[in-house]
Length: 585
Image (cartoon, rainbow, N blue to C red; front, side):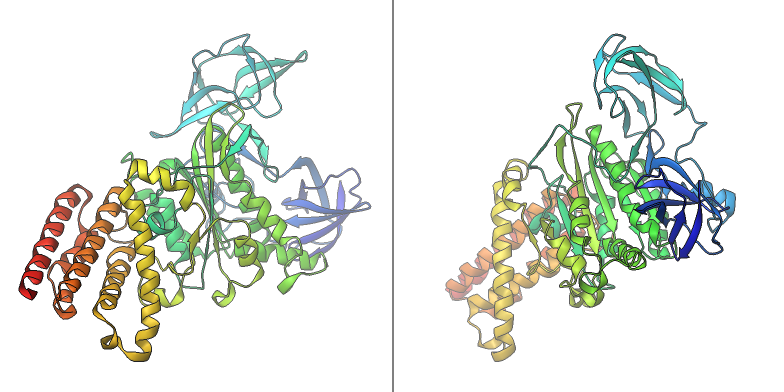
């Protein structure tokens, strides 16, 4: 037990704290505010407080719990909404109203609810088990089985195990190790700052299918990969991440709103419960968990929210699930670190950020990956982090530190956003280092023509950009007809394919099958147009063919009708161009 010596915003210096450990959770002041020791100097402890410190006074008591910042992991996580230190916001709202009261605590998981625990086949008394081994499961939601695993650090033989209905605090099994018996419950606790161990990491060759054409076709991310979405204010970072959370084919989605505006998190909280999972038809929230740490919440808790989210993601990954975690945005997290660093009077790095910022970013993104967990199951964590550089300048430290470690870069463009082109991902500056590793999967599951079509579409877009620079100097009429065709097809790809309406019931999600057919229809148009130019058809006649409008309307065709629509479009394309070539002859 110590006492407060100094208060500086979210930073508290406490004396008489001998025996405390780094990263111990402490309760500060008479209100018992939750904090974490981030530095020790002699008998003094420097504490990062995760709540508003207004009203704290020197001399008030500080009590250490002796435990690091940890999260509760067990049935009931999914469909929940937490703050940055895993306090359930719905429970706190009932206790204190719209604003969280000081020192308020509530268990992250419901202690009263009973779950039906089913023992896995082959698991019985006397079986040798090790950390991570699966003992049984609970049907947490209609679409997700929650597997109960042997806690980390527990290794021995099963002394007893039973099925039935239990709360998360009830003992469902006992494991005997070195003469001692350890109770296993439906819930386990893990520290957030330490990555969970795995058996091995491997290179993923399976894409995270998002239903967003510009991502899936041009700049895919692998399951277990990392991606960054930097962009200026208003360029669509949050909408893009929400689309990925809604429609990606991950088994579990963890959405972390870190320092974002309250109205943006409100959209997530109101929309997600109403959305249907495209795979199961069940509510999307049944496989989603939300962590809301908005801009009006204490700044120090932003730093914790990122770690809370990734620790929960690791827990589900160890069960064998593919998890996608959206961090919106890591810039706010870095700003919280900068504020704490300044109050610690540490030597500042570039733009005032702490010198260890790149290290922290790398440590966070390295917790992604496709792995074989300790129990032999394969799972993955895909981290997609938004970055909010001031003025859209990605030369600032957070963007540069992120780009050093991520392998997919979706560069949002303010000019595209102002032109109402969404997602406003710039196809000339974005990149994905996963394309080569995923090529075989696309060939096997979509078709070789999709891989070839993607390469051709990128070449056309790059050539179109070069020609647009020339057009600004000499005008489009000065270009030869083959180059005019390139401009025409480039415009069709941009506006008819890459542009996607997030709020349109049909266009919000496009399957890979539909993407392949749509892109094939555009490239077939390009092939016929080139043939027509060589046959002597003037470009003005090519540009006025009626089928162009039908190709542009393909994005609004339902998945069930797309094959017949594509067949008609291709037939009309061939017929119209055949007529033009015959007329030219």
